[in-house]
Image (cartoon, rainbow, N blue to C red):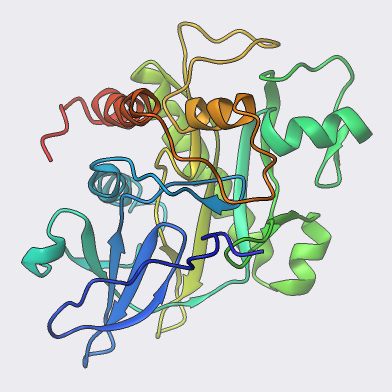
Length: 293
C-alpha cells in the first residue's frame, strides 16, 4: 500500500544548489555539496498512514516555526540538528539547514496520558509496550509517571509498530540513554505547555548520532503532527478531548465512510479551515504570538 495513493508522491520542487534526496509523508529532504541537509516542510497532511489529497494552508511553515521554537527551548537537555534558517527564498519559512545524523531506527514516544494506540493496547492487555498499568483507567487518563513507549519506524504507507523497551535495546544499544532523554524532553515541554493552558498528552522524538558521536535530536519537535495537544481547561478523561492537533481531521475521516484502505477522499473546505485553525491556535498558545506566515 502506498501512503500517497495511486499517483505516488508529488514532484519535489527544484532548489538551486540542493539535490533532492527523498520525499516523505510531509517533508522533502535535500543535500548540498557541504553534506548539509535541507529539510522542507510541505503543506501535505497524513492520517491513518495515508497522505491526503488536500493540503492544509501554511501547515509546513507552522510546523517549521514550532520545531525551531522547541529546539531552542530544549537545547539545554540535548543538542539538536539545526544549523541555520538561512534557506533559499523558494522555501523560506518552511525549511531549515541541518547537520546529517545517523538516525536510530526507533521512534522515541513519551506518554503522560493514556490515549491513541496506548489506550487500545491497554484495553486489550492492561499494559502499554510491556509496561503494566493499574485497572480503571479511561481514554485520556493522566498516567502516574511518564511512559517511554518506543516504536519501529515505518516506511510511507506502513504502520509504526509499538515495541517493548527490551526490544528497543536489542535494536539500539543506546536505548537507555534515549529513554532518559525522551522523558526529560517530554516533562520539560509538558510543564511549559501546561503553563500555556495546553496538555501535552504524548509526543514522539527521533534521535541520531552526529559525526562526532553525540546523540542529537533530529527531525521535528513537539508539533501538532508529532504530538497530541489538549485544552487543559476542558480536559475530561473518558470523553473526546478538545485538541490543537489533527485529531479533528482524523475524526472527520472516521465519520466520512472512508474504508482506510483506498485513496482518502478530498477534504471539504470547512474541514481544511478548521484543521488549519487548530495549527494556528497551537502556535499562538505555545509561543504567545500570532502566526504571521
